[in-house]
Image (cartoon, rainbow over all chains, first blue to last red; front, side):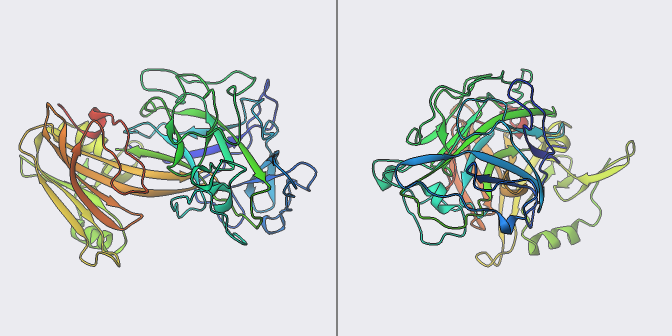
Length: 257
Length: 170
């Protein structure tokens, strides 16, 4: 096979120093299953809540704040808390992509996010009333994520550790501890950024379609099972228009032969 | 073992069901199509042909005389979209697929199929066809195989390719 038959996502239910990887999210999720759900601590997050009943996170009255809890739901009302996700950069072993041994990539993989699975190009700085997708997260808003709308970054930031298993190399697994050195809601860079081999990006990247995204530093080793470690930080801010955001599309973009 | 049974039916099905695919004609007159199948006995399995496994790794990539990219019928392209590349020099045909995997809801989608030929091995100039599932259009143009940029304004640049895996022997 040259395409992967299985790429799954796992979250860490243990600690950064002693990770325990939870049940993987598979292809084909619908109706509340195979979801990542974010919420602020103390707002009523849990592991048995149907998607339609997921509680709201209260937007800050000034400035910005991290959305500091994340849950992975394998079915509509059954999930687990990603214990090392805190909306910050203090932990390294938070999420990982799990590749099977059947794929052959033709170029380096990319990690980004879109407002929905339609993968429409982000409209920087545009906040819409009563959003029903992740537009208001991905588009960002001024002044929260940029000095003006035209340079607004996403409210979602990401970081990736090396390539996973680079061609000619071996599995790259981060040690416990901080992921990168700078996580700022205005720290995204236009275009692509790449971490060095077996390293985190020093500065986290805004996840904003193909306006701002992460590219692996090398091509994933063909027909080799392995894990690509990444982490996320979701923010919200006073410039964000609220709504229900079934935020579906953190995206791995890849090629295969 | 590669089998080409039922190809006409499969091609018609692909045409009407939003599926792009590649096809090659070899110098031996053998024709292979992505919709053909490879049978394995141990363990028993059957699957569609894969460009790398069945064309590149078998050495057939060096025998290609013609390479086609077939795009399906869509509202925008009721006739589909097809491009044929005549391969005048061995080892200059290439092909790869793009895909996205939505980590949030675990859904994988094809994003495009790219086929083409290198025209100038020294400079890397190539002729390229891309069937884009998002826009349901076939894009055709000349570019540089070492630096393929965007084929539409809001799309991603392709990035650096692994030449051997896509079939090139430059």
